[in-house]
Amino acid sequence: MSAKQRLYRVTFMNQGQTYEVYAREVSHGGGMLGFVEIGKLVFGEKTTVVVDTSEERLKQEFADVERFYVPVHAVVRIDEVSKRGPARIVGGAEAASKVTPFPLYTFGGDAKK
Image (tube, rainbow, N blue to C red; front, top):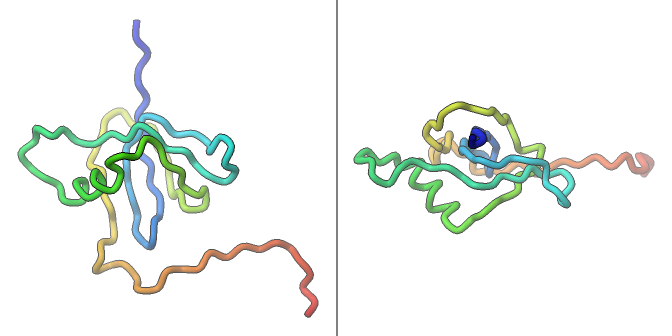
C-alpha cells in the first residue's frame, strides 16, 4: 500500500507580484530560521496543447531549482490540495509597482537620539 503523496499550493510575494506554485514538499527552513522551504515543484504536462504563458514563465524561472526558500513574511498562504491547478503569477509587469518596498525591521534598540 503506497502512501498518498501530499500536494501543496503555496502563495507568496516576490518583488511586488504574487506567485502561486504547487509543490510536494513544504517545511520550515531547516537551518535557515525565518524561511519556508519549498521543494519538488509540480507543473502541468508537456503534452497539453494549450500553453499558459504564466506557467511557462514559472517553469523557466524554476527550471534547475530543486528547492527554494521564501522568507516567512512573504508567504501569503499554504494549502494542502487534492489536485493541481495552474501555477501562475498574479500582477504582471503592467500591475507591478516601479517602487520596491523596503523591508522594515524593528530591533527594539535605543529610541534616544
